[in-house]
Amino acid sequence: MGIPFSQVPTWDDRTPIYVISVAAQLAGMHPQTLRQYDRLGLVTPSRASGRGRRYSAYDVARLRYVQHLSQEEGVNLAGIRHILELQSEVEGLRHTVNKLLAEVQRGVGVSRQQTQRSRVFSAGPAGDVIAMGRQQTTTRWIRTQPLELDQR
Image 1 (tube, rainbow, N blue to C red):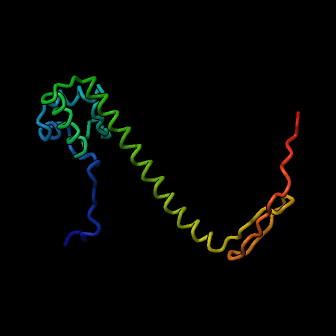
Image 2 (cartoon, one colour; image 1 turned 90 degrees about the vertical axis):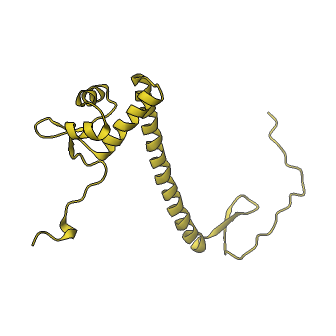
C-alpha cells in the first residue's frame, strides 16, 4: 500500500540531492568546472559519507548564475566571488532587519498593553517625584524669581 503522503520525506531547495554529474548536466557545465568552482569557493556543495559532492537545487541555480556572470556579463572569477559574498551579506542583513522589525512590532504591542495599566509620574516643586492617576492633570509650577546659577 505504501506510506501515507504525510510521511513522505520533503526537502527544500537547499537539500543536497544531486551527484556532480547530474548537477553539471542541470547547470549546463562540465563536472570539472563544478570542481573548480568548489575549490574557489563559488559554490560549496555538501559532502556525502564517501566524500562525494552533493548539490542542491540552490547550488545548481547558483552555478547557472555564476555562468551567466562569467559568460554574458564578462565578470572574472574574482569579481564573481566578490559579488556572491556581497549578495550573501545583504541576504544576512535583510534577515537580521526582518528579525529586528518583528521584535519591535512585538515590543510595540507589549508597550501598548503596559501603557494602559502604567502609572504616570511628575516632578514636584522640590524635585520630588509624584505619582499621578492617568486622567489627573498636574499643577504648573511657575518660578517667580530668576534662577541663580553657581558662579565659579
